[in-house]
Image (cartoon, rainbow, N blue to C red; front, side, top):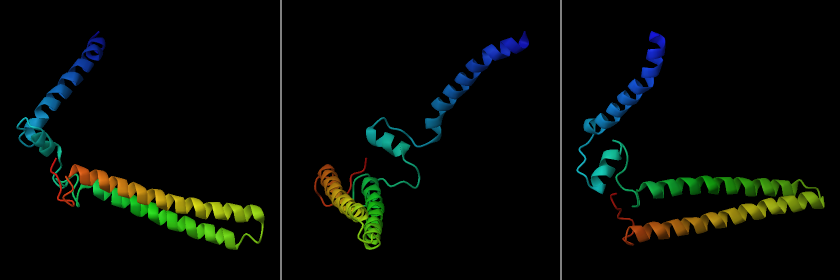
Length: 137
């Protein structure tokens, strides 16, 4: 009887304690003044950058890291394609596969450069074209 009562009451206790924790959590952090900037400041961690869009912004940093990784992979694939071409021994199937590997790696580099240009254009339009002065959001 007591076990059934505890089993029935346990979900209510868990929900009540979680809701009290959620309601008390903003009180422990930064002061929220009701504005969008105050909400963004409250949500930001201690070591996080305040700039989302500038030259040191989070979006630009993520884009640069991804493009570096993509560039490294493309160079490696071009080298692999070249090695496959050299060791193909005149086999037409192997030569075609090696040429396709090189072609797709070059197309990947071109797409990455175009994506970089588009992302920079969009980010500059968000910052007002000021050359990466940054916008605190």
